[in-house]
Amino acid sequence: MKRDTTFYWKHLAKIMSFANHPIKIILPFGPPGFSSRVGFALQPHLSEFLKTEVTFEHITGGFGGSNGPTAAAKCAPDGYSLLLATIGNIALLPNIFPDYSIDPIKSFEPITKIASTPNILVARSGLGVMSLNDVLRIAKEKPGKLKFHGINERSIHMLEFKSLIAETDIQLHSIKPDGGSEGAIDAIKTGKVDLIITTGPRLLEGTRSKDFIAIASISDQRTPFYPEIPTMKELGLNTIGGGSWTGLFAPKGVSNKILEEIFEATVNASKKSSVIQQLSEQAASIDLNKSLKDAVTFVKNETERLRKACIVSNFS
Image (cartoon, rainbow, N blue to C red; front, side, top):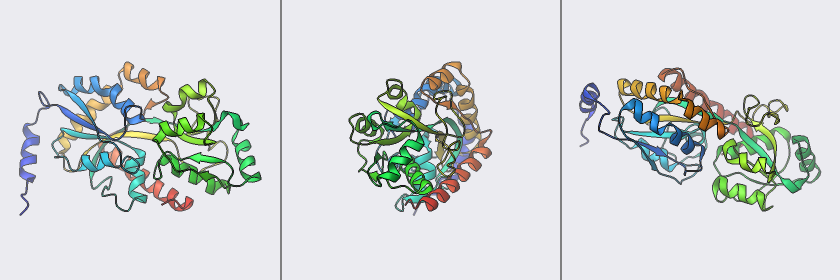
């Protein structure tokens, strides 16, 4: 018979202090990933405001980084275990992964979105293209000739490619994704693929050194990190999305008192000039929800938006 622990957790919330008890944040991707970079920038300041040690545990792997959220959802709802999740493993996977046990609202308490970054479509430097029109011209002249790497079969970047294909009525050849974003970057540098889409932070070095050519930004507006690159929306494409984000989540059942404490600490940590600077150098920016309620609404809206995008692009 399963023991009812509701009273225990409610009582704990009344007396809880984070002092002298470390908080663990689960990271679903390795150190090069966007969410990990955000976590590392925030870590010392979260420790400062929560008055306790903040540690990380990398639980990587699974389709689209699904292992981390799956593990986090099973943690005790005491506020000592959190998840730094992404648009992909929170809002996209529930729409396309039948075996995924995670529901972003039923499995978690959204605390706040923390940061956003553009996703960038880049082309192989030797392909001879400088614009999206150039890419579309080749794709229409030689259907299926251009090869792309979608990072992961169920990644947000694969959806972005599927949306591009559906909206422009072109044919591209998808190679089997291998090695995540690092594998995609290596593949385009070595000429194995012609196109990739991934997060802005991973592409800064390569675009500056001309290892590949930035074609378009998947973001709501032009980003200061890539000011010369037009957005997909500027180019007339409206279904492809608005880039990537990462946010902080707690297991379902954590008390509102604890959630508010973590929310306030995250907001204050995010205001630190060193955090803003670190993220700016990596083509990312602070992008917080206004409240816990706003975070819930945001996650619901993102999940629904991506559900519709999957239908339009026949992505499942």
